Length: 271
Image (cartoon, rainbow, N blue to C red; front, top):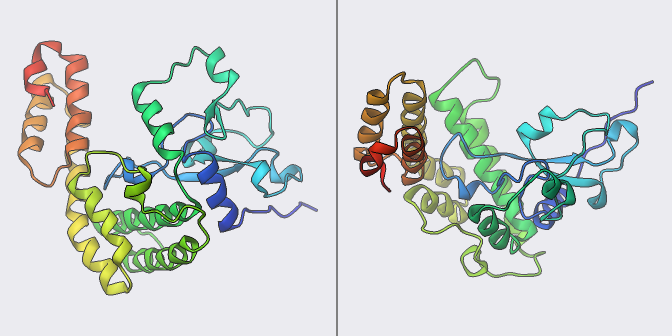
């Protein structure tokens, strides 16, 4: 008889997220959604068993690591591929052996997110569900769960977030703890407004302001990556710069690609 898979409790997931600085153990990717803003490119956190639950690995703090959802999907469950680049928020010997060098962005990420508290995981999950709500609203694809469902999930996680705040050792705000990536963009500020949402109406009101930014970011970036010519990429970049709904962060991502592929266009693509 197959052994039933065990899962981590919310509280354990929150503790692992805090301990690991919201950083994927396999890749170093940032799983703190506020760093990404209102974009489908935001990286979703997942807790992975060190010793697989299928091999009687317990769902405990010591047997879990923070992982991105995609990294978790790629690795196998046999326990032979657990070559972690990061453990407990620090680079491992394996990372160094692979020639890993901490980039300035990764150094900033690890320094800032060492100040995460368990309650931040609940807020992160509220943001994740908000992005899922936008995905279902703007890009429907016969999903079982709709915009309304995910807005209710946002509210549920916000309720749990407020309870978790009382359990935090450090009760300072996110701003005071320095876990926010500066400068704050418009979409980041709107996402932070969720902290004041108490009702489903509040959640939908914020979603109504943030959703168009999510959609504009999606459309701009996919127009950019799917264009076949240099002139086309430059045209999409210029249009995106003029669109007030496209986030600065997404424009910078496109600009960096133009700089890399077309150095002569540095002036056009400058931040």
